Structure formats: structure tokens, C-alpha cells
Length: 147
Image (tube, rainbow, N blue to C red):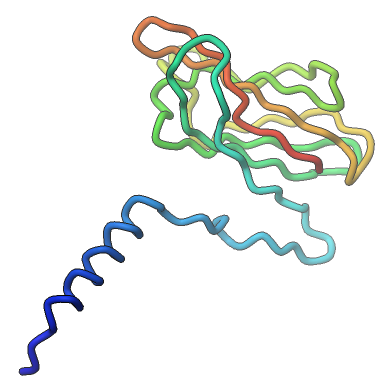
């Protein structure tokens, strides 16, 4: 049996730690769409919160279900236990939101809703998550894309 040099073990350990902390950045199922299938836009994790020092990490995806509607699906994330709902704006117009869900302490992963959209390829969508953690309510952008 051949011994692995000490420097080799350190390199392997560093790679393992790097993979462990960076996670996977590929969208499940890929991001390519075939003709006739809805385009799926990868989600973004939230940015700087509006009301506290806490930053939350969750994701949502957007797909065009028809020429005039889009579907937004909540995908979850490491801070899923704090997300209560997501407010949606399309082209600056408040279109409602996803959740809260009656009887649920947080927004269930996989929850989705349809929203009005008008200009395929030009609809600017912003999703603002409403989080509750340690008694502090925080609003934070969790999705911003054009679809």
C-alpha cells in the first residue's frame, strides 16, 4: 500500500472543507429549457435585511406558466423555519403573496402561487420574505429577477 504524502492529506482536507462550506450552486434539473416547456429562473438568496442585523437564506423559483401568468415556488433553505410569507411585486405592482399558511408555524417548502405577468422576457419580479426570528420581524428580498 502506497502512503499518501502529508501535503496531499492537507490538500484533500482543504478541498473537503471548501466543498462542505460552499455547497452546490447548480439549479436542480439544470437551467436549460426545451421548446414548449416553461422557462425556470434560478432563485436568489436574500440580501441585506431591512429591520435587523440578521440575514436569512432561503430560495424561490419563478417559471412562466402561460404568456400572462408566472408561478413562484418556495424552495426552502437553511432559514426555512423563520419565513412566514413572501410578498410579490411584478413590474412594481403589488400582486399579493405566498402564505402565510393557516395552522403552519412557517411557510411550507414547495408552496407555490400563480401571479399576473404581462411582458414575457421583461417582467421584473421581486419577492420580499417576511421572517420572524427571536421575536424580531424582518423583511428581506429573497427573489429578484426578470422573466
